[in-house]
Image 1: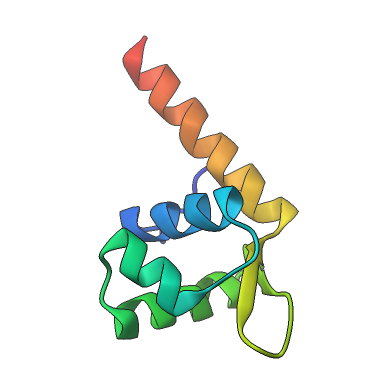
Image 2: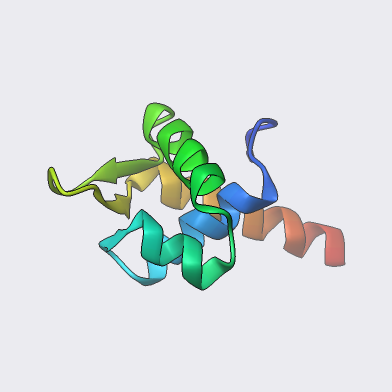
Length: 83
């Protein structure tokens, strides 16, 4: 099930890190055209919720297994809505 608190930007961020693991938040924000401060806030929340995790002390992140499950649930919700 997709969490109620998950925003569209959060899903875009998760999908980015799933496709480009690991990577830096500033690069992700630039590529997704998201303001850096906002991206950093959302990444911090996604880390707090266990959907992203830092890979190194240099602030490189990747998607966790729970993060992948959230993306799968989002895909299923879209597929169900299209039926």
